[in-house]
Picture 1 (cartoon, rainbow, N blue to C red):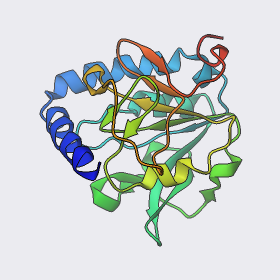
Picture 2: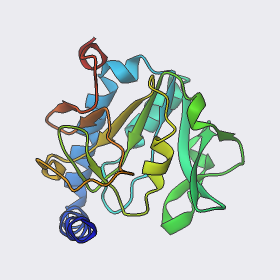
Picture 3: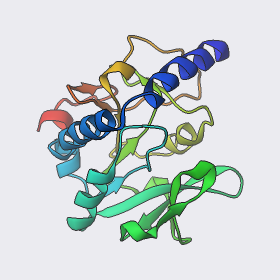
Length: 199
């Protein structure tokens, strides 16, 4: 299984890193607009975002929209113990290059994952399936933090359509997502109530 994941990370990662900048910007915008129009975003009081790396689907539009609508906006930061913590930001200027060259929030005000409430938690990945499976970067950071997410928090992967596969190798520690947003569709993974998607 580990070899299968390694192979898929290599192939899908190379495809993503090779995307033209104009394509990344255009498709990222389409994905984010789909998120903004969704019921989970519109119902959210808190939005958890990530800073894109290596041509991942961007989150700049979501960040600006969430900040301007006075939602609580959280981004991850790697803290001592090699763990991922969520910190609140009130301005884009509060993001600085951190671990692995990824933008991270400054400050020390960590928000407990178990206190997110009606949040939309957006998560990057290398590959996804329509049933909510996710292949991450390989560090297990998001899987560990997702293990503590409350049921009312909606977890959502942001992806290009080519990252959607029929099936992925899955280990016991892997966490499935509620939704996957691409430029062409919204896939309801581990959503039990379809009204979460459509209203």
